[in-house]
Length: 155
Image: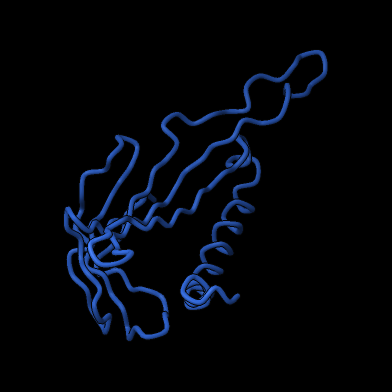
């Protein structure tokens, strides 16, 4: 299965939003090893939220590692791999234009990095699947709390 977001994307529960959805349009990624979507319409109740524009971007992008790393060769004398396993890293990045004050635009970034040792994908794929499932489940379950913490500073 490949990386692909379907539209509309259903947002998670956030205080003050009612049934948030995001209409996505395929966009050109900033890197050849990525896929990107722009949020072009909103659904549900999300007062004062802007969709994607050049001045206030609202994009979601996934970047895979450009060249995947492998464990390398076993040492024929010891039967061991040399050193620590190399790492394969993918990233999911959400970019949203925001105003910090009147006439003070900036961009908010939310990044999730997947950082796994080479070889784990074939030796224990079920453990990687479990880690990804739990992480995304935690993000979904914590979404309102994370938003509240970012706004109030109270955890």
